[in-house]
Length: 376
Image (spheres, rainbow, N blue to C red):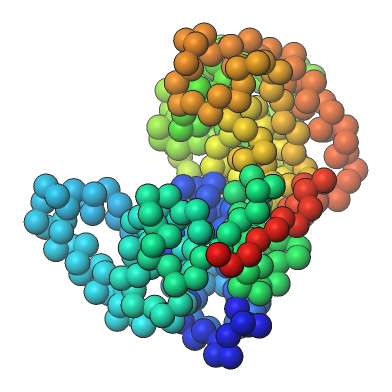
């Protein structure tokens, strides 16, 4: 952008409302925009439930919550329609001159256009004809598959400095201290180390059976690993009950008891993170934490952890990855047949590889070169 336009933007809007992992994947674009335009006002349009992750972020001037659930009732409710009209008017009053749409859907494209910004940048292959609302379109090369690399194509097309992608989450020292105090109260003692275990995932097909988690946690404890801490949202509480019931030892259960910021602060301090393909997995990767990620139906090339500190464990099945929310063969073998032995072996390897090593920073995974991109 700096090289192709004589006038630097003064007011910039990033559109990336959801999901949690996708927001994390867009952080390098925010870091690049702030580095390129340190005096600009930068705002982020974000889903209401994810807004706390960005509110008060040191690189942002404003987080604009977007209530998708409420606005989705526009065809059935005049109140929702009126609220959406007010929201669009509030965007226009902000007078953005550059909008970067990383969502790539017709709704986000419309919001980019409705903002009134003269420069509206997005993907040439945006779905649902979202590309029609952009003034400038970025064509992503055929070799690009991971979501982070796609976003970096937009950043490079804008001339942003993203040679070493950064994933700033803006956690403050007092937040880290408060999260640690929450953990110590739940444990009943001060913990020197802990393993964060996140058994939840939005898709049922992504979840490893609770009995397997219970077996794994018992083996970790018997092998002398640090205490295990269950983390996740309120929707994961039924999983915690099943896991604790299948585990032969006590587990510190914080599922449903942390905010999104507290979850991030706890992950930042975990000695090891065990999880599925999920939003918290991408948080842990952004924080550079040692990570064991359990994969089944999803493709690591597209949604795998974007860091050097991760190990992925999965079964080499002909039907995986199917990228389906429901198992098309009705057997769910990619998760049902994955043993606690296999995950335990990945934990051992990760622990051995990282023993005595300094904390690694998130970076492009080994073997993933900068990907081609161009204006369409």
